[in-house]
Length: 351
Image 1 (cartoon, rainbow, N blue to C red):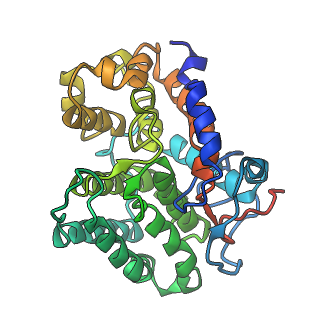
Image 2: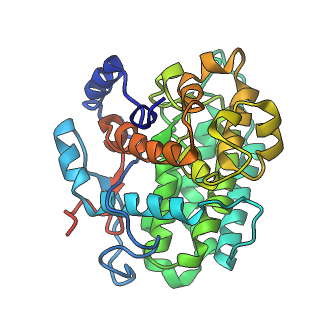
């Protein structure tokens, strides 16, 4: 597979279908990208703590609005955040030493508390196999308690921004109408973290832990949501997609593997490799999870990933994923039409 192929070509029928879906007014989620910034908590405008808070609202309604999105501050800041985190985790294992601040610890406690609610709100008996309606009770509890959770994690110092930031936390767990989850919801959590960096609740030294501790814990949490409540994939392309639910752990996870002497792209399909190293590398954790929940030959149920195993090195895999993310997630109207814009992640044109 070439580098351009690893950037993931789209199926023409899927693209046409997604364009038509963009007319749908159903509300769900998030996605963003462009100029990388130097650090996760600094955009071109510097500190964001002087900005006023605003409850995020929908701004993208049709394909013609995508240009406005791609030229926005939110797009620039989110791409900058994603690429800065990608750089921060380069060559790092989850178990490696790196700063873990008190705020990071509190965010882990927050996610553990949200996970415990799944145990308290078990699935209900219902005729349909997928989309257990108990998820709506979970979602309601999160929505009612989100501001309290965020306040406990980052403190009263950032009180003015808590209502705005909390919206992204709620959006990150899935859609309570369709009971589905997809890359847009995952991006909502990236937006949540990005906002924490922008207001400086998290600082530059927190960048590795934001991915390797906080995002990794979020990943475990949403997998639990997906399995317990039998959530549908949101906008899945089936066998031709990278994964039914996630994208960022593959992108950031491939950065972790840059320069690894033993684990090459051709190695990740080997059970001995992903079983041994899953706890230290997000990418391999994803491969292990996929093999736990899907049956049959890997090349058949995860064809896109199988093709990526033919790329010669992780540098090409990682750069390909960045291109793919911009096209398949940040460039898709059915995803971006659900993104919500406030003052921290603004629809205003970037300067």
